Length: 264
Image (cartoon, rainbow, N blue to C red; front, side, top):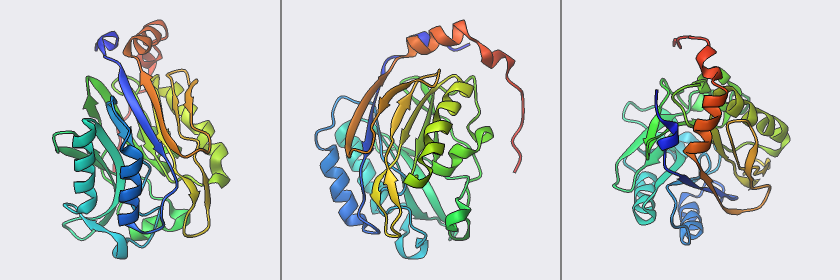
């Protein structure tokens, strides 16, 4: 069994803001300005498709896997000396288009997760290829599972009541469905006995859909540690492994979890 009490504090910065519709250069400049004063954190979280907004114009907007978006993230991660997370529209070597979350480390190395559940109500499944695998990433001993927006509605994909210490969701979740966002996030924290950090955007997109933000951090009981509301800005929260360890020892529901296998 892992010693959760031995985990060092994990310092998060959540970046909640509006974006310039389908203008990557403008968004890179905007996010760089927001990140200028960020320091002393371990993990910086940007919204879904932070360079373009949630667009279905994949052919027009996609970058190569080794494109400017990833290089921008590598530069920022190096400068911040922190892991930087956000998703981009990527054209892969096989010609498919992905809503790809990058996990970029200060040394320039990176991992990625391709969004599994594509939002069919916006036609995302017609323009992008779904991811084929879940990802569990390590940061200072913490086990972090990154997920994207619509993934939140599918608890089996998030489910891991033993190894995951932090579920991380990035999104362009519209204001019209903010109740679902605010109810499902605590559910994921409670059922997985882990912290949850979720970053959403603000402002209206190019289709006129407003977004309310509601970026937040929740503890393992689903209680709110940080609520960004509808304001733009950078929001900070520190997670403690000792608190997670005490709760999991006192309430070890993970020991009674169902065993299952995901098939594709």
